Image (cartoon, rainbow, N blue to C red):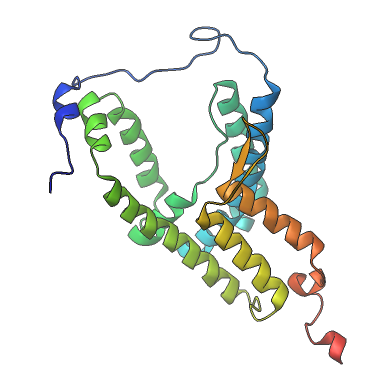
Length: 232
């Protein structure tokens, strides 16, 4: 259809070393409050994403990962990885919902397969022609894949809410869930300053937390109070 240009693949070298960022070698580390202000909210979002991913993953696999190995251990691993990444100039680390979507679609849950895929991905990063070939994938194709992956994540999350008996007929729950979905998917953002923008999952997470705090009848969401209690 003429949407793929293989010229970058022909021009790319067979072997190419990725650009490594090494502190005190390729750059001198420095502290910047603006960067910290950008990254800290993202780190908070990754915590929420991690918890949600672990809950959805437990449903997909059929094992309770919240208890074993334990949410405290997996969150600790995310925190350590985020600290190491920040020292190296990288972004906060998390479980990434896209990967949960892949697991749900493929039904391959082996840790060894996932670890092997990670090693394979790092190895292929040294092949210039392969990297160039990946970049030739049309935007429409990547968009279709993204729709499927994120759709599976959203559907798994809704399934989890239903299986846990969350009453979506209650206005409080309906407002919070619908607001999070629309903001997270719709591309809404808040421009804090010229350098700082809160958008996507970060904004959806923050607004979801705020709504949970300010809307009445939190006891209903916690399951400690019946929605009909006040009418009895």
